[in-house]
Picture 1: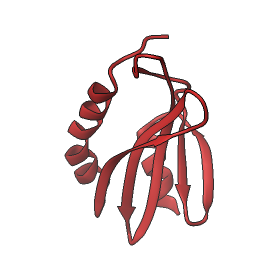
Picture 2 (picture 1 turned 180 degrees about the vertical axis):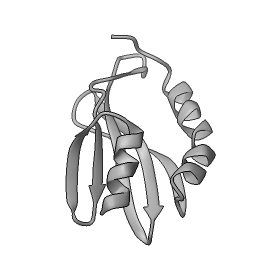
Picture 3 (picture 1 turned 90 degrees about the vertical axis):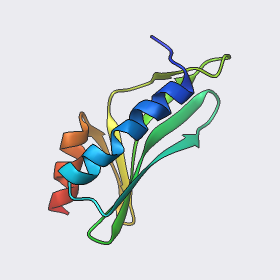
Picture 4 (picture 1 turned 180 degrees about the horizontal axis):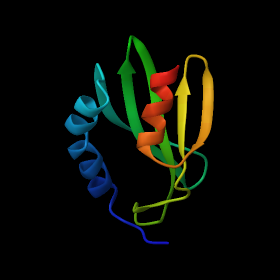
Length: 100
């Protein structure tokens, strides 16, 4: 498992925002981080599309240095209608959001 600097991950995600916004015709998009239990945390995007808000995240593990590594390569989508797990790419996530 390869750990990276938390700020580096956030920077990489931030650099993707404009491209994702244009490619998937999003109203808004931002990066978020959420603490989990123990050494778990989540990094993802808050997205507004067609007036609906979605939280799209990936689970990470944090080490004692504050560095992070993916705990899984599956994306989870949370919305006002519930939670859906098991997406293997952002393209798959956004295609699913399009169909809701």
